[in-house]
Length: 272
Length: 306
Image (cartoon, rainbow over the protein chains, first blue to last red):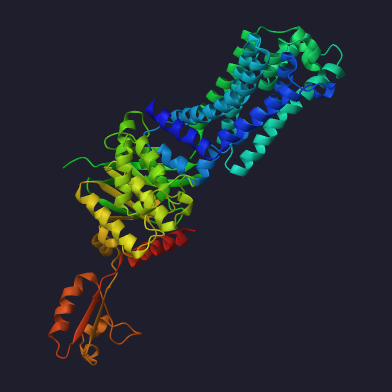
């Protein structure tokens, strides 16, 4: 445990030193405060608008940003250390591969989690003071927890990439492709399936397919509870056959644990 | 007789079709310094990785401190092993002190020990600076400090003197001698040969995964049967007239005798008895020549087979 914390501490401080924490927090805070105030600008109103609109717009932005940031933060975690030779050196220390991996995960995960909490928390606090509604804290609480899980999931996925390639530049390329597949292409494919193939997929089947993509689970968590007027596309269909929040959160947690376990497995098989 | 600290029995490592190391048998005792020599790709690093337990042997067995280094039982022994990899570049954005503190903590030591070690390798003045501002020599010193964490029983150093200036090299060998007198064993891996011979007890010469020769320097010299070069001066052709001595004369140089090791003393005695001798220079084959000899022999036998 001490070893894990030593690694986690180092990774966390790396995140602070490289200004990752500050920049992610700032991006999230600016976005969320901006959306809170100007989210309804298109309909001619400036100022705090309805809660569901705000969370819906935040979620649809976060679903692109968070995976991208998590992948950027962690894609070179292992391949970078492999290239500089420190990975081999670390493994001659009394430090197991799973300890190293978990330590990195805790350190970098803490950066993402803290940035999400501070950045989006800022607009939650702002909205709360403006509207004085306790529901805000509930809705934002759910949003922030699911956003953190989404970030952790993509951190674990980026470890898979980082452990499977031998060059940093390749890892960067794969990270970009991964982001594109999960955040954009997957939904397009689902939509095509839904529209193009008649009777091809049931509502139930669609929701199950969505479980294969952590970004879709994140969308479901945050949009399912809202008035359906704010939601459209494939999601609206899925929401009607909605799973319970507990099931959705379990699926998100599974999307953290599964890639992480797989990463440990790959790491143990990896030749040095 | 104590059990050796490290022993390899018929140990081999193959990567697919490639035999990186084949049937290696060797042992290293406590307080012994072993030089490991060979060209790039000779299997030096593979052998180090086997001893470190980072990879497992595909044949034979490796034992370090009485245990297989890749096993779970050997876990606690790892803090007693120091390793300096070849071409390691530490976390550039951290300061020297931060890097060393990180590694010290992973071995269960504190920041204070890290500072002491930085002082030992002489880069205390730069410990608050980022590693990216370090010169090659300073990085190498930092790497050495890292390998010295916790006064290891066993040190494996891959090209430790690359990039060090002569003074730093001297300091480094002084540290090795000191560790040796404290009972630590050291494996020095190198292809830079001059200067290393006074500091090693035994040498191992590897080529393409095979052991070519192992032994103390004088044993190796004997095996190689390289002649001793003797250069007397002031004799004015007396050597050429002596029927016994002129057999040793080289063709191209009038004043140089190439004498087999076992006849060195008798030839020297004879030379000393000659009148007019004002100086004499005796040079045994050095490690570099021994190394060249074994490599050349290996290439010739391989060439004959192929």
